[in-house]
Image (cartoon, rainbow, N blue to C red; front, top):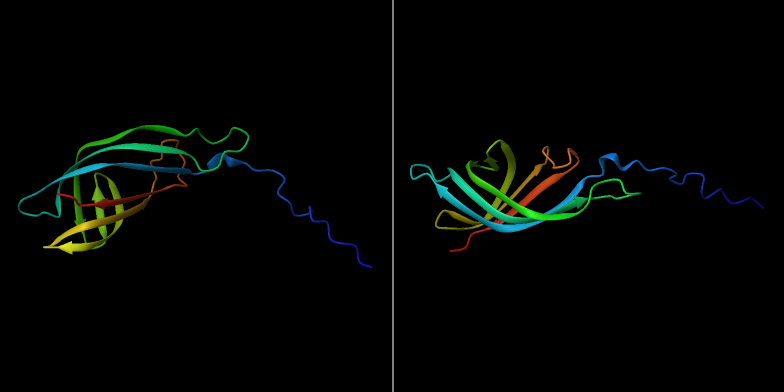
Length: 132
């Protein structure tokens, strides 16, 4: 009879969650003020509430979950094709439900290189729905 392999031989023995990532979500309102000459450009204001925290918390490492206001004062934006720039941040964009040349739904995603805890293993996704 062959002895069973040691099931713990390849077990994880140590975890270093130094770069554990960030999870979060937010909800709020975006007010667009497009340029009259070119509505794909203009300024926007964001007022929202954000909840975020460490994606992995082991032995107290990572960072605590928190809830806070997250607001963006008037900031320049521009949209073209599949790109959306907000200030200095560049997003990949998809959109749909276009009525009269206006997208009523916009999805944005980017790798978040400015995470609040300095961790660059994060991404930022935004879905905006137009309402009158």
